[in-house]
Image (cartoon, rainbow, N blue to C red; front, side, top):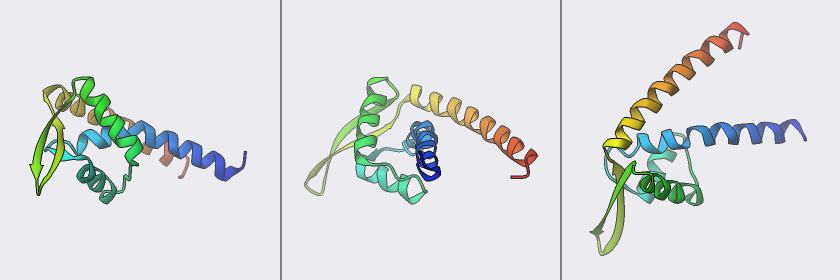
Amino acid sequence: MGESDAFGKLELELRRGVVVLATLSQLRAPRYGYELRQALADKGMPIEEGTLYPLMLRLEAQGLLQSEWKLEGGSQRRYYSLNADGRNLLEELTDSWQGMNEAMHRLLEEDGQ
């Protein structure tokens, strides 16, 4: 396995670890799928449709999101947003992420990174 292959696989693993937190962070207010993808991409976290839509369905099935269909401009769109459990989880994951981020910053500073 080449160095570039190893980097790509490890980077993908890192992204998988934060995709739930990134998605939840953008659902504090209702958004439909395409709007959510754009918000994530605009903030530097592009997510493919084939990853995002199944994730949203899974999060809804886990009781973290609520959704409703709305008619807009002649099209039905399904809007997702955090429910109370989703907001609590977002807060917990955010605290955990900030702690890990601070620890990694200290670790990388020690090695002169």
